[in-house]
Image 1 (cartoon, rainbow, N blue to C red):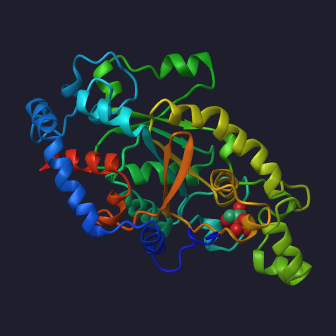
Image 2 (cartoon, protein in one colour):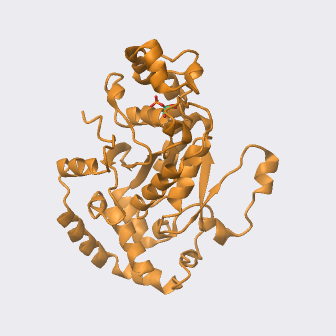
Length: 344
Ligand SMILES: O=C(O)[C@@H](CO)OP(=O)(O)O
């Protein structure tokens, strides 16, 4: 069980070993891009006719669509070829990102549900993460209610080549809904809804919040602190165990996010070390023993393909120009090819 596959030790190249073990190679990626280029020539011609160079305005290509909210015109049901390929492949992308370094990560303090922003390095990590996923479709974004996850999602999206605008949805009251309305269908189509949910927050660290991790280990012992930090069902004093965190985070994922994936939406989730560990435990069917050694680095995007009700882990996109990641699926390669054709 490759539980350490997402642990970054100097880059995201771990994904390559995953890639190789899946039998994907860069040559395959290039070959598949050529094939796709041929198969989708007509489709691309159609898209080009509607694209206004210099404006990066994709909206005009979908003037007749009845879809008015979030669906990406490049992949929308109104685009016949894409629609056909979607029916065939019936797959979508799921990106998970742990937030970039926060000011309390930097100070080595237990953070939990304390709402701490990113450091400059965290900002840079988020931008780098955005470059790595800049060619992967994103129709909806979910973040926790905490600013470090929200900053990460927004900064990452500044790098996306599709140039849609991520917009935080305010559903907290009737007035918030009314006051944040958008009155242009065209503008809505160029937006990505960002849903915030406390259920995706970091595990509540109880009375450890604000304490220094090293000092706590010195005081209570390394083993005790490791148990609090990584065991599945032992909570830190007055805090949540990973199991308790999973009860809300995985439930939210199943009830709110999975239906979006099933309906064909490509989703990005920006959240936290432990809320994402619990979700990955569910996606990868890890045991409570296996999840102990699962560590997530800050700011590294992780890609899954959701296909026929199954989650297939594809690793971490290694870079915006890395061909390997696009060998993952035909559909991702199609998406990138269309972006290339429209933006060059
Ligand atoms: O302090 C926290 O909230 C978390 C994540 O930074 O720490 P840990 O790695 O101990 O789960």
